[in-house]
Image (tube, rainbow, N blue to C red; front, side):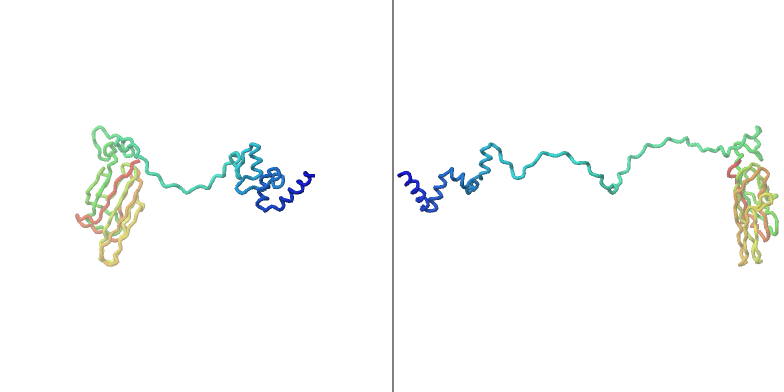
Length: 260
C-alpha cells in the first residue's frame, strides 16, 4: 500500500511544481530527454546529429567540400590574326663589293689593223678607225635648189667630208649622227627649206619662214645607218641661205656612234 501511495503522490507533486523546477527536473532526466526531445539543441551546444557523428569517429565535412581535380579540357580554337607589328630597326651594313678592273668594253668600236707603213687617211686602223667626225660652216650664200657647200672646215677627223662637193662620204659602215642649222636670208617675204639627204633621199627637213621680214633658222638632226660609199649632205629646196663669212651662222656636223 505504501508503494502505491508513493507512485501516485510523486507525479502529483511534479505537476504542481513551478516551470523552472520542472525544467531542471527534466535536465536531470537524461534518459527521458533523449527519448522525449532528442533533436532540440541547447543554446550554444552541438546538435544531436553532430553528437552522433562525433561518437562514430567521423570528422565533420565543411559545407562546400572541394572534390578532386578533373582532367584538362580540350584546346580552344585559334584567335583572329592580330595587327602587324612595328617595323624593326635597319640591319647592319653589308660588306663592300668586289673591286672592278676599271676597264671599259670598247670591243664594239675597235677597227681592223692598219697598213704597216702607218698610212691612216681613208683607212680603218685600230687606233683611229672609229674616230670619224666633222664640223663645217657656210661662208658663201646659196639660194634656189642646190647642195649647200659648207666651205669653212673646222673639224674633219677621218677626212670623210669634202668641202668642194659639200658631201660626207662614208668609209666605215655603222650608225652616224648628223645635225644642221641653216640661217635664212630674209627681207623679201619668202621662206626657205633645207633637207638632210642620204643618197638623194630626204631623211630630215626644216623650214624657215620670213613672216616678219627677219632672219630665221631651219634646223634638224638625224641618226642614220650608213654603208661604205653612202653620201650625206644638206640641200636647199627653195629660198635663200645666209653665208655669214667666218661667223658660222649656218653649220653642218656629224660623227660615228657605233661601227658595224
